[in-house]
Length: 185
Image 1 (cartoon, rainbow, N blue to C red):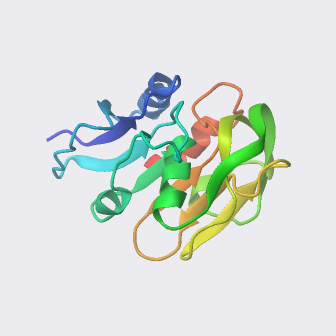
Image 2: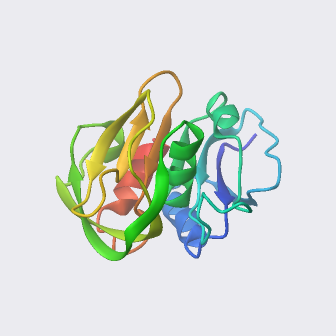
């Protein structure tokens, strides 16, 4: 049985780049549409939730049960995936008063395996109109940027669940592939 990572595609323009970052870390992955049920088997070692052009607050926004996934495997939410995670666990996600698109500087607040060997102020790429205003109970802040209060976070109790509101898979996130690899290993 092949060990693999599942990338759930919510329609992000960067989904293929997430897959490339995973494969560059020498790990097999498969891209699956968000609406296709995952047949969990022992070979699935984690799930990455992609970004999306949708707002998590849109009535027709893509949805998956993240709690059900985290009961089985580690999960990393990227941009929309992070916002969906925060919202499902009770956080407030709202339209930003300023759309963040382009370079930003990640400010690490707390040491964590996800940000291992990442500079304390690493350049990252943002592409979102919504923002996570506060973290739900049971989560802790890992990083911010100059514009947003929550740029990276993790669940503190039980399951391995991370969220990053930036795009670690793109070239402009200078150390982003380290973030992806840190999640994978």
